[in-house]
View (tube, rainbow, N blue to C red):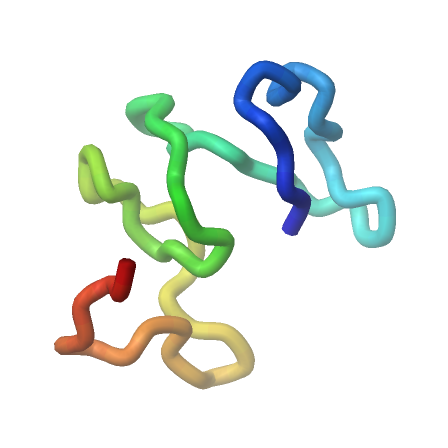
Length: 68
């Protein structure tokens, strides 16, 4: 996870320097920005952003809305 200002988004690396994995700041389907590094679905189009589980545990508990 890396914080940034939208006007400097073009300077973000596309891959993690430690593991080489893809770094995303936008939905690959619709291009919308997502607000949480832990998001599993795009808030705009509903497309999947990442697997909903990590190490066998759900990333978000079902039935709990996003708290803002």
